[in-house]
Amino acid sequence: MQPINPLRVLVACEFSGTVRNAFLAAGHDAWSCDILPSEDGSNRHIRGDATTILDDGWDLLMVAHPPCTRLCNSGVRWLTKAPPGKTVPQMWAELDEGAALFSAFWNAPIDRICIENPVMHKHAKERITNYEPFAQSVQPWQFGHGEVKRTCFWLKNLPPLTPTDVVEGREQRIARLSPGADRWRERSRFYPGIAAAMADQWGGLQPFNRLAEAA
Image 1 (tube, rainbow, N blue to C red):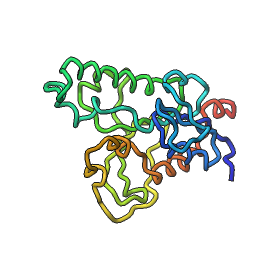
Image 2 (image 1 turned 180 degrees about the vertical axis):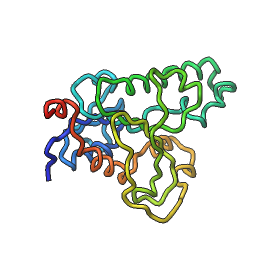
Image 3 (image 1 turned 135 degrees about the vertical axis):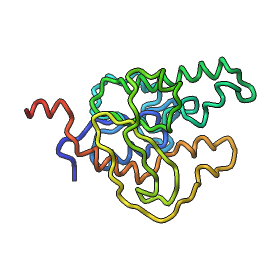
Image 4 (image 1 turned 90 degrees about the vertical axis):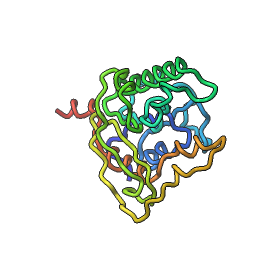
């Protein structure tokens, strides 16, 4: 069944199409955008910088996996002792870039926004414009996947997701991935069960401009 009020949805920082396809399947006008090509070859993918299209009339912005290495707690140690091949000034410059990207998404001219990210350290929070604490953290096992991977959502005008399918199993598959060239790709892959919950629970919300018209 098609939604009564289909939304224009931008899924930024996604090349897999997982979240985009969940909203498409629910009848919404959904597009993914990433600097990488679409993994599934979809013509519903915009290859490029998502920050350049934020004012194109979207109803909902979902940032599926922004570059977070320098923002998250697990990476704060590199700000005082850089990894091999890097310098401490480079680490701080990359932190500034990551915070600027998060700020661009968080302050986008879009009424409903969700940004996925791990827990941030204090230096990242200080650099984000209009920073607010994350609204919710979820686990894959709450949405049909027997795995552990805490994911935080920063939400603007969106309700927290309600778990849809709590299952057994607490496998730490992502943490145990072997080192390799494609490890980052697997770590950034979104869980279909969470994507389906987003499309179902957020896809039924009225766009703000239509709510104003109805009033």
